[in-house]
Length: 107
Length: 121
Image 1: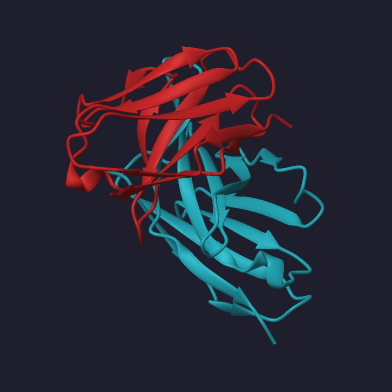
Image 2: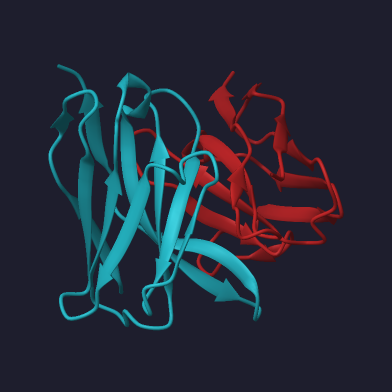
C-alpha cells in the first residue's frame, strides 16, 4: 500500500495568514495527488488535482505543488471559510489512500 | 449537476452484514467508477472500494474479504455490503463518483452527504 503522511496534524492560524500543509508518500507517486477540504458535518470537496491543478470554482488563493514523494498545499491569505480539515489522496495506485488529515483552526 | 444519496439502516448488530445503497441522479451513470469511502467518528477517510458501471470491482485489501459491491444501471444505483461487522466498522459512510481528470488522474469529485452506520447490539 502507498502510505500518505500529512504534517502538521493540526495548525492554528489567523485570517490573512499564509499556511502550508505538507503531504508525503512512502514511494514516488509522480503527480497523482489530490487535495480535499472537509468542513464539519459535510462531505469532502476536491480543491486540487494532479498535484497543482485547481478544481473549477475553487478560489485562486489555494495552490498545490510537488512531485514524486513530497507535496504541499498552500493557502494564501486565509479566509474565515477556510478553517476546515484538509486531506491529501493519492491516485497513482488504484488502491487509493488518504493522508490522516490536517485540521486548520482559528488562532 | 450529479447528486448522490446514501440510504440504508443506521444501526447494525455485531457479526451481521451492513448494506447500503447509493442513488445517483442528475448525470451520466455510465463510464464512471462509483466508490464507497468511510470515516469513523472524529477520524480520517478510508477508501473501501469501487464498482465500475460494467460491474467490475476493486476493493481495499484491508477490507476485501468482507466487502461486496454491486451496481444496478437500470436504477442508477450501486451498493455496498460489508459482512461480519464489529464496532470498528462504525462510521460515516460516503458514496462518491470517481472521475478521470487530465486523462488519468482519478478524483473523487462528487460525494453524497454521508450516512452514519453504528454497529451495536
